[in-house]
Amino acid sequence: MDAEKLAHFKKLLKEQLTRHLANIKTEQAAALDPMDDGVKDSVDMSLLDVSRETALRLGERESAMVAAIDQALMRIDEGTYGTCARCGKEIPLARLEAVPTARYDAECQTLIEQLGDEETPSL
Image (tube, rainbow, N blue to C red):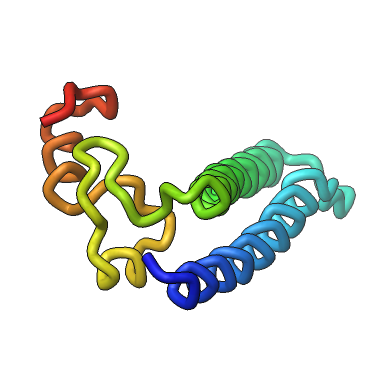
């Protein structure tokens, strides 16, 4: 992949990283917000618990995205970005535009999902 395309994806990934980090901060604040209006009936407490649990799960998803973005940025720095981690073929640009954190080409990703294991043997 040429330097111009790598710079494009690096910029795209950094923009996504900034957005996801902001989302994590928001979700953590929502999960930790006491939201105590003085009413203590069981329905209100249950709703509060569900809201906190939802905020925590959303934060976990955002954290997973941040990790995937960090890995993609590391692959750019290492010179392996855009190469399938399983078969070594180049990942098509259209796939990288759609999923900039992609580690696998579509064929390998499908195979991995079917087998339910990322550690499948190489082709």
